Amino acid sequence: QVQLVESGGGSVQAGGSLRLSCAASGASFSSFCMGWFRQAVGMEREGVAAIDRYGTTSFADSAKGRFTISKDNAKNILYLQMNSLKPEDTAMYYCAADFRVYGGLSSYNYNYWGQGTQVTVSS
Image (cartoon, rainbow, N blue to C red; front, side):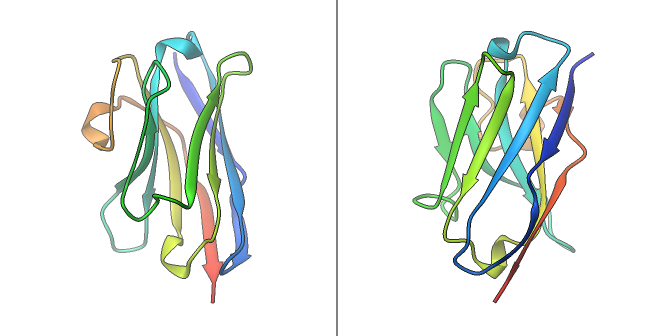
């Protein structure tokens, strides 16, 4: 059973940084494509960043230049480094994984989800 546990959320002021982590268990980490998604109150879940099984990354336009996604296969941890945070980045952030090679930014491509970690950015 694949389990994903996010951590690293919190409250920061605009312009600040946070690094989210997602610890995975239950399967070989290198077999996954993975992604970070977020959902603000009253909004649909949206893809923020993704990394395929071979390390190729993709980003939502809102994240380009500010966010970095990476994974440590030895530690089974996925990261999302978020810099220059804006109030509109406020949301619950979810880690997702799937055994396909490439998942991209569509939530329909991921079968495994964490419980989420809250990020709040104040102006």
